[in-house]
Image (tube, rainbow, N blue to C red; front, side, top):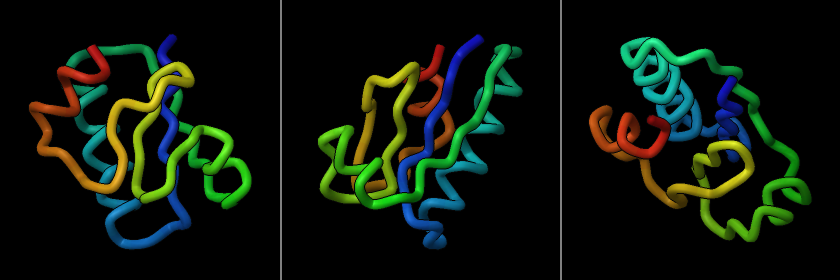
Amino acid sequence: MKKLQILGTGCPKCNQLAERTEQAARELGLEYEIVKVNKITDIMSFGVMSTPALAVDGEVKVAGKVPDLEKIKEMIA
């Protein structure tokens, strides 16, 4: 099971990233768990300075933007 972590404080872009990530995981047929990481100290522990960010199994894949659906699929596949 993939652990998909959305790092962000709950801003509109953070929510958009969460929705796109969930859609990508569903379309790929993955077994996944989405975890929202919204405490600043927790986000900083990933080394992320700009949100939103996406981490897959603890590894940051993108930060500071919301990639399109196809790009997210590549990151989580």
